[in-house]
Length: 297
Image (cartoon, rainbow, N blue to C red; front, side, top):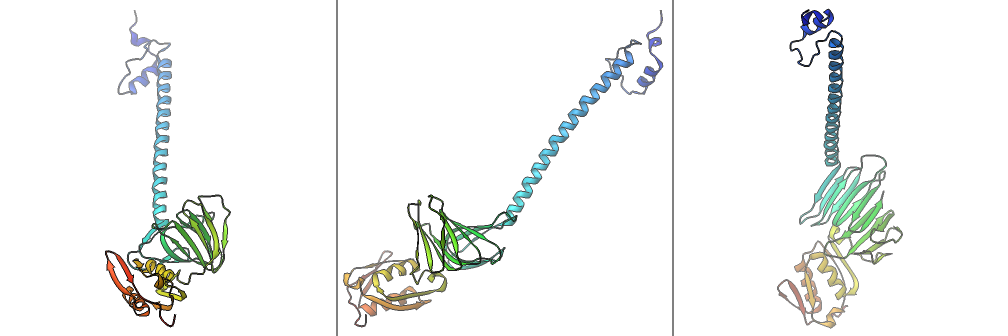
């Protein structure tokens, strides 16, 4: 009886001898031995390669996704900037050629466009004056208003303490719409303004007859023969105070004056001397008592 080794063909024997570890599943039959081992070996190698290619593809996709996410966030951080003002007006030069004056206690987030199909976008909270680029458009979003402008000057007032947003055009034309209703977009020309009520129940274009809408920026209050009661509203808004006029007669006295970079105490002193009023303070309220209209009013 021949030994089993005698049935191993030379080619099979040569390949087996080259292996460091001989697989335990080899069929030592002379007919099936090498062919079965060869098939098994190449099948295992093929499946192994498939698994490795699949794993490599997964790793590539995960890595590519991570790089894309990182680059997107890095680009977003580079394209977007945040600015805020404290007690003073802040002047800001924005990328894209836009220029901004930010009122006290106001904030903006500015995002520079990253392709030609987009526009520079600015989110406003508070009040700001904008001089937009002659070459590139700017979209300003404040509360429920969206304003598109280019080569224009405008003021937008959208305070958290007020239900109104007011867009006033100084130079050029701007287009404004309200996101809370289906009203058509409005074109606002110089000396006009758009008033939008919170909730979108009211949005209208009107003539801007308020000489003090830029007082926060210029530092000048102007009153031209208007009732003191109306002037008081502007003074309250400008100085952030509360004033109560007790005398009904004094409320409708006319005032004509200009206050340039003047403190609230000087304004109150002018009113006191002009209308013979008595001034006292109660908590955070300034109270004007008694008084009479000035003979020249």
